[in-house]
Every structure is written in structure tokens, then in C-alpha cells.
Length: 411
Image 1 (tube, one colour):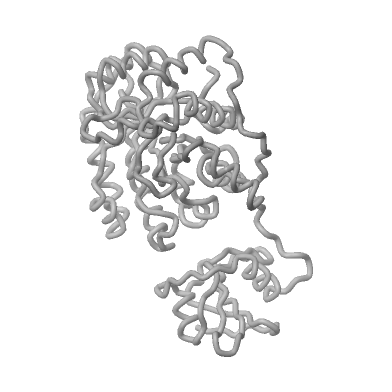
Image 2 (cartoon, helix red, strand yellow):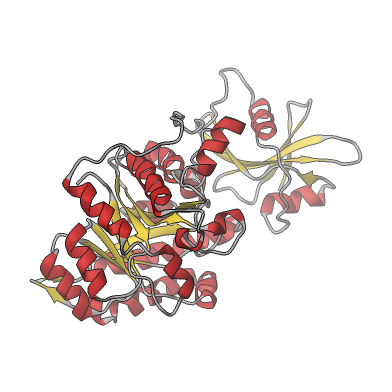
């Protein structure tokens, strides 16, 4: 098959079944887990990797941190009680995999909340795997999380899961921010669509080829530019030809990455209960074009000016002979922004000393030891300090001061 597109199916119906028969997508995700319908799908397309997701309301998702391990197990149990999770087809489970929560929080969530979600996903994933299914992890909203977040806050998830889910959208083309970022800031693009590459560059550096990527939602939404969350059909300025050109641009990149199994088109079979989802509908002309694409080599559609995709910046490594103080101060300067979180251990010390944090927390490995650091400044004297702790020794906070080589230890 010369494309990597799968289906995100919100409802069942003969029109959806017909599209599945024609395209036979390698991966399908279902919000409506009607056993009768998906048994019919298995009969015509037994090789599909079928993912189920049951919708949890926002209030339920927000409570995961109250008891992440128990809540993860309970949500897995809720899924495993579904008829679709107990049904087999030709002596195999009807469904292959199940997602946990959807777009549970943004990248700006606190480190503690992220770590608790790691506990939730581990508990959920272990129960789902024990029942013979694959759990699909992450599935954060488009434009959220980087490889550093995955490695720092979700190590348990990365150890226990094989499949990592991503959502990727842009507007009014799928390359808009990618191209603008390269041309205007020279930062390599890949901040909305293709963001999975930034994440996986770091994850694969640590875990090799352990993980498989699924773009569990993709397409175009005006929501990424601050408008209503509606799709390409809602804007008369975006034609089907325009959208198809974007899909082919994205597909060309997906085909370059053998660790990506599929990108699921949101949506194939819009639910009538949510009228705005109909603006994302792919049934009709897009499915017809995919059917043609599968049977012949299409003419190359118009493309944006080609721009190389640079690799994400590598993790900084201190120069030989530098001291810990020099390494900490250099890395802090590189990351300097203002970000307040008074509940964090480092910032409690920073504020107690009369300083103000002006960088996020960052990682630094020095002589084989991992540290978490944060830059701070005294607004009256101008003194700059970098407060830090060894990973695992959270109760002992030290700092490096601009111009001084000694650490002041605070216990």
C-alpha cells in the first residue's frame, strides 16, 4: 500500500463498512464498539489492527491523579467488561488494542501531574496486556509534549507500552506551521504535524526501536489558530483538492518513517450527535481518492517549496574540563524563560531565599550523575543562582552562584 492512512471511526453504518472494504486500512480506531458491526468488518478485513476507545467524560479524566494506580486499574476493568472486549472472532479477540484517556492534559501540566499519569498508564497498560490486548499510550492533544517530557515523566509507560499515540493537526494546510517555523525561526519545524519526529528522536535514542507510533488522530482543524474546532469542510476557501494536497504531503513524510504504522483520518463516519464533526468527514471524495491511490501511481500533487527537516537539537554535553557550576549556568542561560510553580521543591527554596525563577526545570548529566536544575535571580541585587538536586535525592537542594565556584548546600 502506498499510503499510511487508517480510519478514526466515530459511528458504524453501511457507508463506513463500504469504505473499509474499499481501502482495507491497516489500522482502524472505533469509538462505537458495536460487536455486530465489527464482526462484519473482521469477516471482510481480518488483518486490520482494531483499536477501541470508550469515551470518559472530562471530570472522570481529571480525577485520575487522586489515586492513579487504582484509577488506571478501574478504567481497564471498565473496558474489559465491554462486550467488545469479551468477544472473539475465529478464536482471536475481536479487538486488538484499547486506548486509555484522551488528551488528558496539556504540556503545561505540572511535573507531579505528569508523573502521576505515568502511574495511571502503567496500571492501565498492565491490566490490558494481561487480558491479551495492546494498550495505546499518550494520545495528547496536537502540539503538546516533546521527547524530554516522555523520558522525564513517563518512564514506566515507555517500559510497559509498545504503542505510542499522537494527535497531529494544522490549518489551513498540514505544513503551515512546519514551513513558517523553518523560514522565520530556523528551528526545524515539526511543532504541530510531524511533531512525533521530535518526540521519537529522543525516545528512540534511549529505547531504540522498541516502540511503534500510531497517529491516532490527524487532519486539519481551525482550532489550532484560535478559531472553532471545525474541519476543512466548514471553510469554502479550502477545497477538497487543497486538503488532498496536504494529505499527500503528510503521507510522503509518514512513508519515510518505518516506525510509524498508520495515521488515522479524523473522521471516517462522523457522529450525527456532534454536528461539527461532520466538517471533518472523509467519506466521499477523499475515500474515492484513496481508493485510486491504492491502485495506481498518482501524479505528484502540488507541494510546498521543499525544506529539509533538520534533526532536533541533541542533548547538551558539557565540554571536558568544565565544572558543575559552569555546566549548570551555561545550560540555564540557554533555557531562560519565566515560569512559576511555587509548589515545586526547587521553587520553594528559590522563593524562600528571596529569588525569582526565570527558567523552567531542566535536566543535566554531569560526570555520570543526573541533576534537575532551575535558574533564578535576585531582583534587588541581580545575583544569578542555579538551584539543583540530584535525581532521587529530592530533599537536598544546592545552588551555583554566578561568579562563584562553590555550592551553597541547603538541606
